[in-house]
Amino acid sequence: MKDKIKKYLKEGIIIVLMLIIAMNGISYYKSLDLNKDRLDINTFTLLDGKTYDIPKDKPVLIHFWAAWCPICKVEASNIEKISKEYEVITIAVQSGSKEEIQKYLKDNKLTFKVVNDEDGLYSQKFNIKGFPTTFIYNKDKKLRFSEVGYTSTIGLYIRMLLSK
Image 1: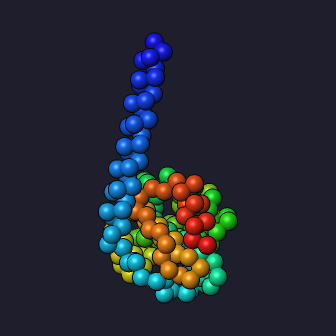
Image 2: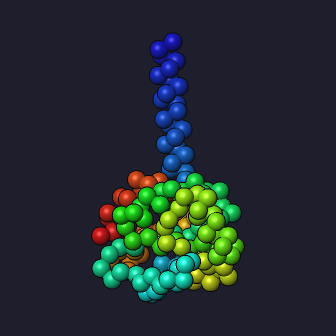
């Protein structure tokens, strides 16, 4: 009995590791076409009409998501957590009107900064093909990391720490 449990545990760990490797490979492949240029946007207009100036001396995380994306909904709490400690701007792509996005944020208890990319202009500029997509720029606004698909909270924290 004990040997069977060890066998199943070992097989389970191998399967999890293979899935992690496969997911990272897929994310890397999907991120090859992203715009890797230096961040040249200094100001965003947020959902509430306020302007947000990208800080000049801090790393920044730019996160593209959509209200209709199930993976984005799962990942939203990770983005929420990291937005409490780091500079984070999120871009809601083709997710409806300002009111619809505000309702989505309220229903999901999200408070991070949001830009409504209703026409998909920002997603075109960054060459976004899948959701969610996350970019992390260092304090000099050079791209350090890009990720297509789900990213864990710990993964986001590590990437932000490495981008200082």
